Amino acid sequence: MNYKYTCFCILLLLCYNSCKKNDQLPQETPNIVWLVSEDNSKHFLRLYDKDGAPMPHIEALAKKGVVFNNAFSNAPVCSVARSTIISGCYAPRVGVQYHRKMSLAPMPEGLKMFPEYLREAGYYTTNNAKEDYNFIKSDSVWDESSKEATYKNRKSGQAFFHVQNFHGTHEGQLHFSKTHMDSSTTRTPIDNVAVFPYHPDTPTYQFTNAYYRDLHQKVDMQIGDFLDQLENDGLMDDTIIFYYGDHGGVLPRSKGYIYESGLHVPMVVYVPEKWKHLAPLKMGSRTDAFVQFIDLAPTVLNLAGVDLPNQIDGKPFLGKSVTNEHFNQRNTAFGYADRFDEKYDLVRSVRKGNYKYIRNYQPFNIDGLYNFYRYKMLAYREWEELFDKGELNEAQAQFFNSRSAEALYNIEEDPHEIHNLARDKSYEGILHELRTALQYQVKSMPDLSFYPESYYLDKGIANPVAFGQQNKIEISQLVDIADLSLTTFSKAQSKLENALNSENSWKRYWALIVCSSFGKQAAPFFRIAEEMAVNDKENLVRIRAVEFLALNKRSMPKGILKEIVKGARTESETNLVLNSIALLSTVNPDLEIHISKSLFPSDWVDREGDLVNRRIDFINGNNNP
Image (cartoon, rainbow, N blue to C red; front, side, top):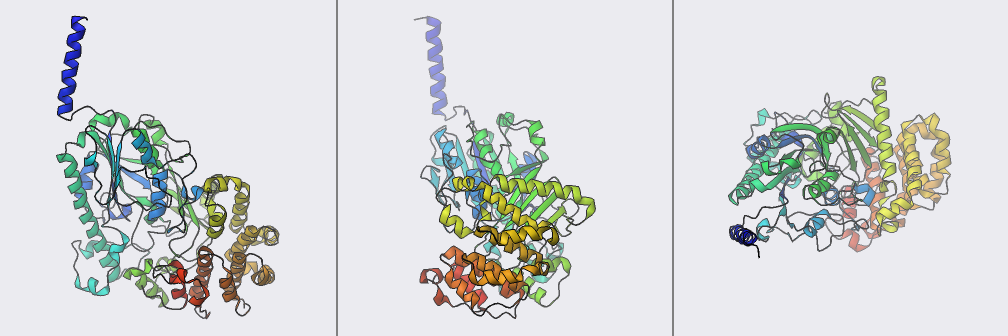
């Protein structure tokens, strides 16, 4: 054997053993850590807003990382946002858009939750500890997922992906009593905190704002401890770190709502020197490029050198394939809000640059419709009390009034989305552009929420993506009917009449929703609605007909609501029926409605937190959080 070659082999072996002994084998891929705070929009951090909480550890990370000025959750609530993240898919396309789930959906055919791909590539994957997915999860996603999960159990030299969740800013932290509020002090000076203009400026809101900023500072200390742990373990030079909020929140009109306070989240990404070739951005800077939660999964896979599955909707914003040119073109985000617990709605949004377009598909709904979990917060209850007393200005009262079918906001000039520009002729071009973009989005997915949840669960839950594709043409037709509310009644009337007389139940269903959107302008359809309320073969069409009549103070056949409630076949259908009844009892307190729990199977109403149980208690006047 060649003497030089033999010496080289011996030297190589000695170097290998030395590296192995000291656990310093060079990694081919970076470690990746996510630090995730719950329920906090970017509005509450000093990093973004002068009135925000000082978070020195996050701010220190930002100084050597990148601050994303435009990071967005696609959904304003936990399970839907986290389902979007774990799959990289738009929730209404894959059937996981409802919070809380009535039934778990399977992952799209051929797609895995993204940490599973990391494991296959050799990563150690850990999650501490929240999951909250609306998907069926396989056993191969995490090496560890628990309150004790840690990256420290990996093999020597093994790259890891770790998620650390921080719960201190969660909505439940604001479910304090008036006694607690009156007897507490805050670290954040109450006088220094500006109350949002759509909130009443009262001691309750002043305290809640200050207290919530205190919670941010506590979370920052916990994040600091975790970063110290990474530093002490000698991992900072090999680890890419993301900090972000899991969606917006949590003061009223944020979590659960599609406004910026519900979707616009803080995000900081730190990339150490060794891995800067994977980031097209200069560390220590800020970027206005838009990133969404659908982008997180492909970004992590791209950083890890893993090929991206075709079924993912998102696009990576870090990694070898990402260039400055592509990065700077990112300026759009899509949002969706559906059922939150027992409260149904259907709202979609698209933000492009400084402009935000919101489409309220059921504009007669009110944002402030009672929701048990929401109204455990003193601030929610006080807001409603002040509305009932007539003590709110127009911006503050809007939360309890019907909405416009579409809204357009200039976020730079109107960050709290108070001044709707949709009817301003000077913004006609922007309105048309964003309306068209949103119409394309919901049709192209297609958006499964254009079927009632109960129908989707019955017909589509086994394979949501295939169900959507098989019904893509019909969903597009339903979108077109829904969008009749965007024109004048005179232009929509003939098409509405055709839809009301359609053999397709869901075309009749959506036509009635549009009639409710037009209000008394749709009076020519009162007679047919009265007929449909009594005789339509689809129970959910009947409740929409009653809703249209009752919102316009038309008399209804005696006992019709009880009959429709009794006709509901599933818990999901019952909940949707009760949501309409809850709305009617809210906007028309003189409408005497009582729903007996004896009408329902015991397992729907015996559980304290059950959605049907909560709705019945509210309708019957027993709404004590």
